[in-house]
Image: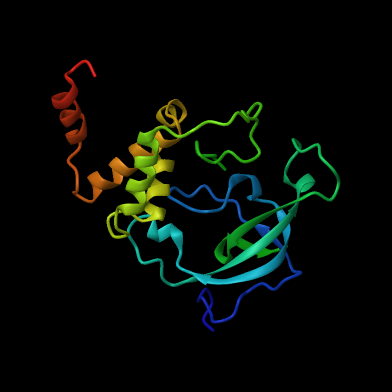
Length: 101
Length: 99
């Protein structure tokens, strides 16, 4: 597989720790600011979907990207959360926004 | 990393208003309008992008479905379905300049 090429298999697997990349790119994306730079655990691989970042501008969204359910401990998402230890939040994050943690 | 106006998660936002309220007929029509417009005229991704691209002051000032109207109009202008200002002119014709 060429470096950077989107392959047939997901890059991450359930149970793996991943960090969400921090970006200041202009344009539409589906990665909320409150998880950027944060580390969570892959809970599921949803499959491949057209990329909304190009579809937002009339593109066809190809190549499709793997989408992951990532679970974060709420206490890991910043200082404002004051709730119960172990409370989590789940977010659907595209593969190109994730790196191994 | 700069947060954009729509990207609210984790920000303070005050208490949540839990009162029940009905949608006004025009709001239901806006919802129906978005559902009815074909995918190649406006996709959900283009709609979201238009919402996010709104001037922050406009975003903050408008109600939920008023933002939808703004975003839909934006994309329809991009696609050449509407001419910028066309809706405003038509509303003036119908209601008079004070509307």
